[in-house]
Amino acid sequence: MAWDTERTRRLILDAAVGEYAAHGPEAARMDRIAATAGVNKERIYSYFGNKRQLFAIVLTAELERLAEAVPLDEQVASDLGEYAGRVFDYHRAHPHFVRLLHWEGLHTAEGEPVAAEAERTAHYAEKIAALTAAQAAGNLDVRLAPQELLYAVIVLAGWWFATPQLRRMLMPALNDDPDGQRAALVRLVRVLGDPAQ
Image 1 (tube, rainbow, N blue to C red):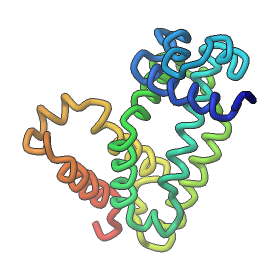
Image 2 (tube, rainbow, N blue to C red):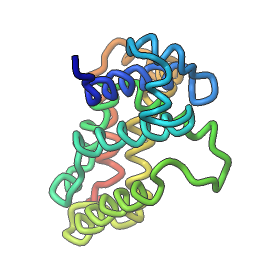
Image 3 (cartoon, rainbow, N blue to C red):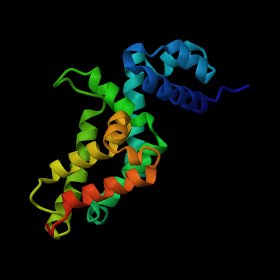
Image 4 (spheres, one colour):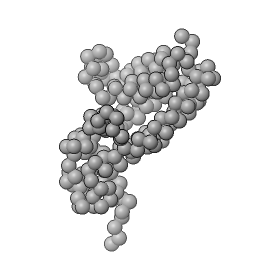
């Protein structure tokens, strides 16, 4: 019987996402990933390298999924609140993503390069260019730099999932209302980007 390498790689990556989201890059265990994926632990090392390398691959793959699922161009940037709502929707469907980013931040020293940093920076530059174009067209407020707007959207959309305890304390009426949470986020980001203010 032929070994299905692609399927095995996918099983390992799926198992690694859950393991890293739950335990971070330091406490994650390769034997748990192997058991969850139903493969021999040596397969992980032969396909992906060590634990740190696998974490970088997992995070890069998850960032690519987000970029593909929620693109940002000039037209989308013209309604930045709705874009933030779509990012919120992605995080609601994929709650592990924000955890992975937090683990990366917790385990990376200030100034130390992160996985695929050059590619990620280039991707963010494309988003910043879309925001710049939307500002030039008069669709977004120019009082904030496009980099500041993008950072605000990323933080505001993800923080709902990173610190649910704050949401619970600050906005208890929205605790069991993800649609209300999304609406609040969209309103907030629209105020940030409104050129009429």
